[in-house]
Length: 180
Image 1 (cartoon, rainbow, N blue to C red):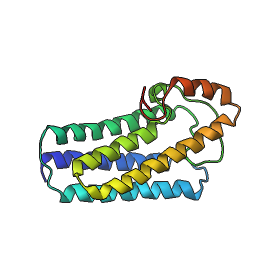
Image 2: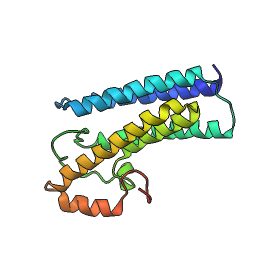
Image 3: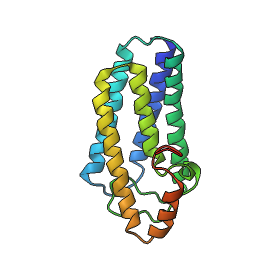
Image 4: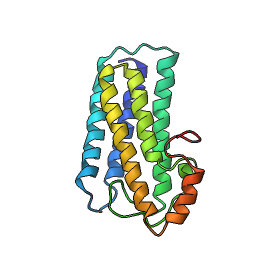
């Protein structure tokens, strides 16, 4: 295994374990959609890591760039986790609106930094592995995340925070600052 693969695998393992810790930090009862997404995410990481380990990683500027992008996704996840740990933060697919609107940390720039960190991670995995087998699973997971964010935002917009969240929504983008 070359050094680049090693760095990539360490990053994926860190992301995997940070996510397990995040997914299990609340004792609230979650519905089947949340568990489906959790399992889908974990299976994807295991599968994609297997593909990368089995592939021949050519060390070139593009591969190095996407390994750095992959690492950036971990940093965004950690920054988001640190920000949300200061609040009572509800997980995805709950049936209640959050008790407060978080607009600090990465939430100053985007409304769903956890999802963004995952999507950056998945897309970088696609480019690192250069496996067409990942295109459909990644597309499906991103669509799942999009619908999850719609559900979460609908809950907030039907809660006592609708005015505050409406203003916040006008100032920020869903996943990518200034774009989307």
